Image 1 (cartoon, rainbow, N blue to C red):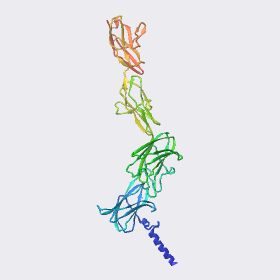
Image 2: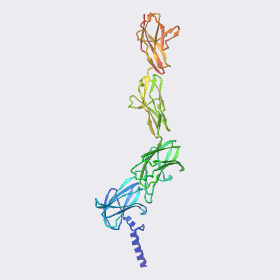
Image 3: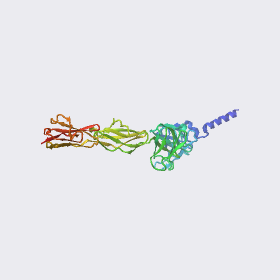
Image 4: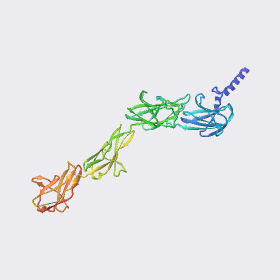
Length: 451
């Protein structure tokens, strides 16, 4: 019995020495010191004896390790299971510094715990520093939590920019799929905007796909976003009805790959711009803009100087055509229209409204002999103008409507008033009241002289 107990005790010593993984080197991770990023560590490395350091990544990202020593040193990075390896690196002798130097540029990693192992065949001093670069992905992935399927898809909103990261790729782990869920409440053409960053170390063939899946997981759209180009951004368009969809990003990459994306309703495009308008005073002036897109909204703005703008208060100010009754006070006003939807907005050209006078030519003074025909004429732009000639017998102080006739034909309501002049009318003054639409204009005052 005593011999059996001794045997068991010896076995326990061996077990503790080897560690719970069954590997002599791995057993020391239980005493591994957790390191602080960007801090320089200096330790003594015994020959054939590994040193382990614990690294905790708060989020997905990558780490870089710079190390050096008096002897050749090797480094490894493991997952906590001490089986999954994310890289191994060796140092080389640097004649300039008289030391063995090495660097670890670890492949992208999930958030979680990792162990860094150093080893040398000969005793050596060891100096190293670990830096961490956050992936900045919107939804941080960990070793235990990822979103690579419909069931674990992260919910996104149209119009919001998100960052993604193909992380965790190493010798045994590879994350090359991210899935996002989006609910479309307005059927329209949607733009999928994708950006990639060129500081990534990727294979030439590692270009990402973005696929759109319906609520049942069936593929309805597939775009090879960059297709072996050097473009930094790419866009694709897809028609979506109301419902739930999934965006599946996938890339056969084995190195770090950062990307960003946004899904938004296709921005309006102006297909026929607004133009300057000339309108007769009192008539309706119209400004029109044509645009393509879904769920379009219009808003017309008005300005006196083209600098300060206010929303038009016209009833039609939120339609494609702005209709306003012209007045002289609006002459020279500037207008523009902003066309928008959930995807963005576009602004029309700034246009000017010129309000034209109804009257284009004024009547002139007349001198006629008594008994002869006297007439005054006004010229206008409006074919729908209405006329009323007026007469003043007190030098223009007071006016009354004329009832002039020629051979029983009334002329006081035409563009030319005519009548047989009498000596008693000499010195009388005449003018015409011209109406067009809602506007009224008066001609100049003219004088009749009867000889």
